[in-house]
Image 1 (spheres, rainbow over the protein chains, first blue to last red):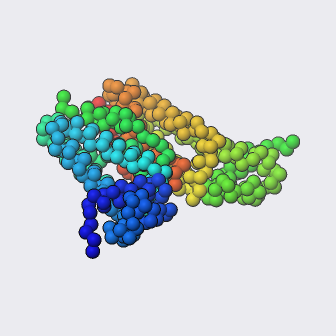
Image 2 (cartoon, chains in turn cyan, green):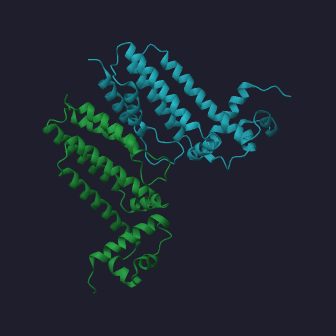
Image 3 (cartoon, rainbow over the protein chains, first blue to last red):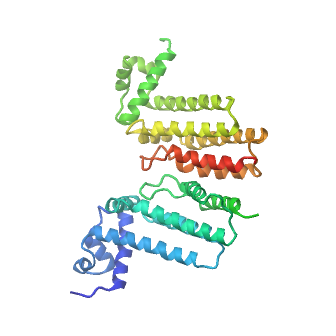
Length: 194
Length: 194
């Protein structure tokens, strides 16, 4: 069996991501993806057995990028309030980039969720956990004073929910980063030890 | 010309609302609406020239109901915090009732907005203004202490935005009234003079 090449795999995922979000899952064939990468379709099948496997891999790549971005922010020298804002603006931009990345990105998201129905809840948990880590760090370092952490966390996450429309829905409003920052700053101020 | 009867007009609007949200705007005919009410289609045309006129009238009836509900709450003997919660829960239920009222309610909302594109913004302004009135009353009566009213109002409205998904979109999540109340109570507590 031909040895699999990580760089080639990466190139396949990038091409697939672009084609899938631009033309949709149904209209995209394995041959077209192979053509975009400039490889034979037989070679493509060595990497992925079918479109579903590609969808799963594309999704994993997104989650992996989220993880890398998060680690970078959490381990930076920023203060907890800065980390909070930086992390959520990063998420906001990632979601927006995905949503505006192609006319079929909503269809693509729906296909992924059909394959992995637990995904939205899992992602929600990851975000919740990261925000919790940052808030706890802020409390520890004296940046935040929060009496009821669990409650404030829940209210805060609902309060920014408007800025994260589900990617499975065709765009019907475009939330503004500037407004998200107003909401985050407001909460940071409420939590700040004066 | 035959004299128009308010009760009959009301019956037409109720029948139209039900049929339109259940079967959609495109599939509904003037004859079907007349049949639902139990009047001749010629009589229906005395009241409304076409489906668009009916759509506009249905929308006006919704706005009128909002106005009636609002007046009742604003002029009640409740405290400002109670009014705030009561008003927003009333809005939440009205939007949910509309959304769940028929399988074509999203299509109906899109048709209405094609006819009146300014509607969502207008409705947003009405809600914003009503919340402002309640907050001002709360400040005056000593229930609330708010230093930057304009900013807090903006943040608060974004914070509850998640609970009011646009009616033009097919349902993709169902916000919970209980969670909305948690968010409202949290803000009320922050604003409460201790």
